[in-house]
Image 1 (cartoon, rainbow, N blue to C red):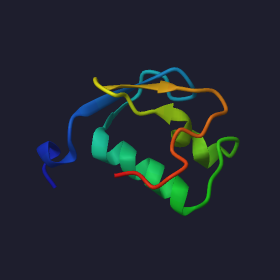
Image 2: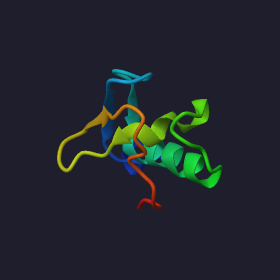
Image 3: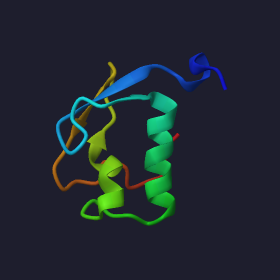
Image 4: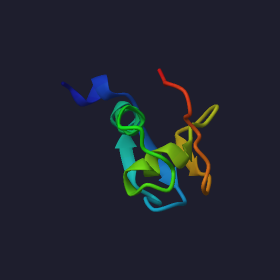
Length: 74
């Protein structure tokens, strides 16, 4: 898979992974994996669920103790 196929690079703001960068598709897969494993926000493996997807832009913002992805994502 070429890097161009993985979408833009996003940056996380706040939370346990502040300033980390991911290819957007890789981070979406982290969220899907947490959902498949029925992880919760308080679970160490559930941390991706608390990052809110931006309406526009590439910065995903941490929302303390909130599941920003309760439903399957695209």
